[in-house]
Length: 444
Image (tube, rainbow, N blue to C red; front, side, top):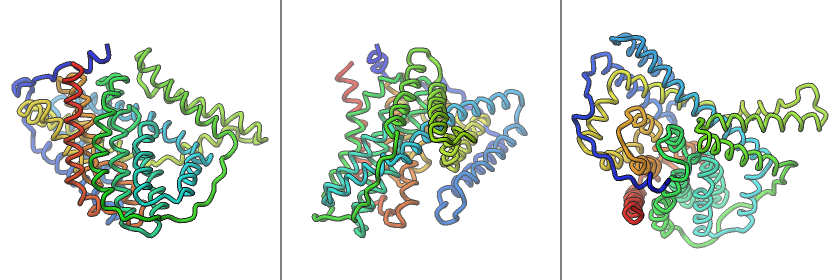
């Protein structure tokens, strides 16, 4: 049944099927505000201004312009609340996932894995493939951002003072994390958004495993050829696993299972399953604190982990979603839908949006398409999922994984170093999409 849904032929849109509203001068000002804010996001490393700040200001300005220019202010306010609801579901899901990852990390689980690998004194090429494979395998579970941070640290440890290896290894990690995150509802913010919107059933994401693997292996095979032979790395420090680490791992697995069950069987939004799982963790912290004799504030550890979440990133996503929602209320997204899906067709539009996600980040691109809500089959949404996930790897700023590593490697991995591999990443992008279309023909 799932495969039948997935193999539905691509929808065909006509430009006349989509209304193309006129955009007022206020609408043009709203677009200019968003562009200016996003430029500030792109130069965050130079200005040191948090990337969330300009988008938070822009979101308020855009909605104020939308209300000022509205023929029906109540309708605009309803759109505002709908955008807020979209963000709220995303926020609660990500908050729970990141809280668990931080808690598991504090137990020494991820450090222990890194130490085990470093103790092997891997060669440069072996280390390149091990870290890439780890990123591809881990990102469907821990999301591409968390995966990039963990495996990027491993690349730096293996590379030591070899800046060339670190640049190549981090580029490989970004590609692998984005590709691996594309075939799981939990692997990327974009896949999560598409899954929560009900555009792709849970099991249908599995069709993307082979195409996603191709988008990573093609460029990785070329990059690996440029690495010098020999061993690299620093002496690792063994980190002991803390008590009850396995309990947290099991609770996280149970939380993900709850979210999938709620969505697939009960048709409830996935965030509700995740917040239920957050309750599992809070109850565990309560009894753990009492067992340790901490009766004054039992369970406070749970809130410490919640507080340690990367709030700049979560507020950045809020700003993006609210800005795009405001531009949609002004009519910009209807015009974009008519220009892309109406004039070019679904297939071409999805491929081009994947390339665009490298420049604009894949989150606003995906949210814009979900807001447009063009008539597409499940397979078309799978194409978009792979496109924006793999397409975000074309540039270092195209995904959260790339942006994170730019700020964590002390200049050993840069925008320019990633850019030189853009042609082979583009080949992998095309090969992955080609593989997906080939699977469609084979299974239909």
